[in-house]
Length: 485
Ligand SMILES: NC(=O)c1ccc[n+]([C@@H]2O[C@H](COP(=O)([O-])OP(=O)(O)OC[C@H]3O[C@@H](n4cnc5c(N)ncnc54)[C@H](O)[C@@H]3O)[C@@H](O)[C@H]2O)c1
Ligand SMILES: O=C/C=C/C=C(\O)C(=O)O
Image (cartoon, rainbow, N blue to C red; front, side):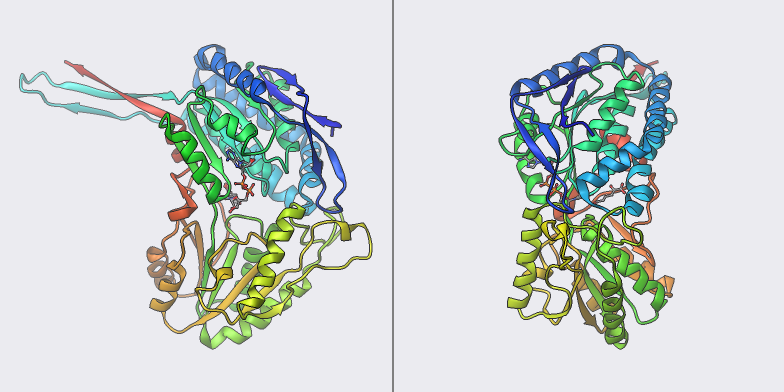
């Protein structure tokens, strides 16, 4: 990776006077410096994006745009190892996860929306009129214009491209702002855009923080037509306020406090395996990770013992080391937040089944941001650690006695992103899933993704749905044309 990551606007690479450090969470060392976008750089990106919408990019037909987006995916695949190294350096996530999930999904996101835009239908309605001649209504779709894409650090390339790809497929020009914690793969993506000949200004990149920096400069800029954001619910509130003045369209994928409901008739071993993934994948830093586990009482003790064994068998370490399951948390700040919840759980009276602290390696990893996989039992549903999103490798497990009770407790939350239900009785699985207040419910699995399906949350977990045609619906707007015949 370059020693300094720069901003990208209108096909120019821009360095400002200010930089910030990109830190490797494995050992706290500096990966590189990053040029922080200032107001002039954001304005330059917005102007370039506007020119693209009104110019070559905006005039391009769907087929040509789709072909270019396939080239983006091809080039990402050709530079797979660069993307892999960059994502790992920024996040410390395991090689095996980045290789099988993060980087392939980056390319896949471009392919699916390139294909979908070519098959995206318009509506048409014939109507009768008093004179008997009738009228014909049909809709045409237009892009929103200049779209700001603001992304988090947990699945950096996957979540940025999940929005950039459909926005561009629908003909918008994009200004992407990756998280300040994970600027590298977004910068590679800008290089790829340039390498495959995406017209100037169709993709722009600004680096920086949220408040008082690139994030806020972008969301408050009057030239930005729409904002799509993934991140914390609190940040969603701030962005919604920024968007309110000009009633800009927003699409939000926010936090979660996701439940799992495990019935005594589940396939026990598969459930334990699935829950180990659901709780500990990416060190618990996936918005869909499970932090509340409800287990039917007859198998409660056995389940707690089995998940404890799984947690204690997880290998923490460097991304490139063979057999490593889990890397560190993203930053010292986030580690401190997660550790504060570890302390709070004890103050609230939790039984610590396993973990609850930081591991010791005896080498440079002790300067990194690792925490132990952690399981608690013994708390009521009103404990703060059972209500607030922690975003670490941790869950609380509670017993339940009836289906009604499990549904009520699963729904007793301010969030509503996802849930999983584990039972071999599929009628019950469906019956319970139907009543869970969440945008996504998995039965006997977790994070199994078909990119055509609606994706998003209810309550504090978000606004709107993306995925497949839902993304294209957000990133374009229909105009109805009515012809009196
Ligand atoms: N629902 C989902 O699909 C989904 C997916 C991934 C992560 N998340 C959530 O994201 C959170 C973790 O990510 P994070 O810590 O990077 O989130 P965050 O909200 O702190 O930051 C996300 C992005 O917003 C920017 N930002 C922060 N404040 C801003 C402001 N006032 N104006 C404009 N931009 C601003 C940041 O710089 C970053 O790029 C968790 O809550 C997690 O649940 C949700
Ligand atoms: O951390 C949140 C993960 C979100 C995942 C997706 O948006 C996806 O798989 O498309």
